[in-house]
Length: 387
Image (cartoon, rainbow, N blue to C red):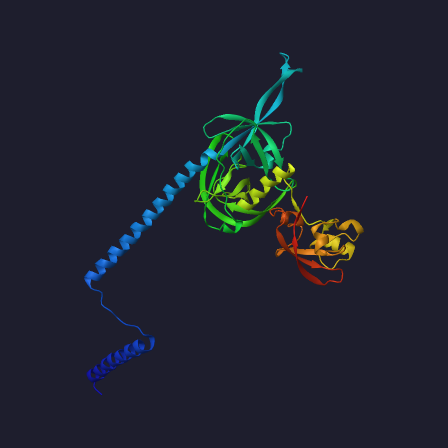
C-alpha cells in the first residue's frame, strides 16, 4: 500500500472513531455541548458582580451590627477594682529598720463583671472577689464609681455575684436560651477591663471549641467554651456575647502556653435564672449533687479494692455511702457500685464526677451508667438534688 494512501486511511479512521466516541459519550452520560453567546457571557459577568456586591453588603452589615451591639451592651459591663489596706512603714535613713505607722487602702488588682438584674446585681468570677479582706469598687461605663459587696460565691465553679450597695438601676444583659444554641465557629465578642487598666476593651473572634477542660491544683472546670477572641488578665468576669448581643459565657481563663486560647464558662438564661432564684430563697448558690460518698478510681485503687473497672466513681461499700433522702437513694443506687459515665461522659481522673455535673442545676435529669460488684451494668435516669 502506498504511504500516502495509508496516511489518508489512518486520518479518516481517527475522524470516524472520534465522531462515534462523542456520540456514545453523549448518549450514555447525558452530556450536551452548548455555545455561549456574547449576550449570555455579559449576563453571567453581571450576575457574578451582583453576587460579589451582595457579599460585600453582607460583610458591611455584620460590621455595623457588631458596632451597634457593642454600643448597646457596654453600659452593662463594669470594671471591678480590688482594694486592700496595706501597711505603711517608716524607714530610718540608713535603711536598717522599718516601723509601721499606719495603713492605706490601695488598688491590688481588678476584673470585670456585668449586670444580671436591674437592681445593680453583677456576676463575675469567684477568683476576682474571693479575698474576704479586700473591698470592691465598681466602675461603670460612664466612669462613675460605686462601692459593692459580695453576695454569694459558687462553691463548685468560678462564679460569684456582687451588688452595688446604694440604690442603683441598671440594664441587665440577656442570655442565650440554651447552651445547645452555642455553635462552634459562630462569632464571639469579648468585653472586659483588660489588664485591669483598659476599661471595656472589645475583641472579636469565634467559638473555637466546646466542652473544654481546665484543671490545676485549685480548681477543675469542665464544659468550657474556647474562643480566639482576645482575653487578657482583667477580662475575668466579662461577658462573651454573640452577634445578637446575648451572653454565651463569662470569660474565665487563658492559656499561658499558647496564643488565642481563651476560655469561658457557658451561661444560659435557665442557669442564670436558677442562680438568682437560689440566692433569693437560700441566700446562697445551691449546687447540684447526687448524694453519694465515693472515691475516684485509678488503676491503683482498682487493684487494691479488687474492682471490676479501672475508671469511674466507686461508691463506698458502707452504710452511710448513700445520703438518706437523696437522689441516689431515690434512684436505687447501692453501696459498692461504680458510676462509669454521666450523660455519655466517661468518669476518670481527668473528668471527676463533681466536675462533670458542675454546669448542671438542681432538678436537671442526667443519665448514669452504673456497674454493680458482679460487673453487670445498667443505665438509669436521675434528677439532681441540691445542697
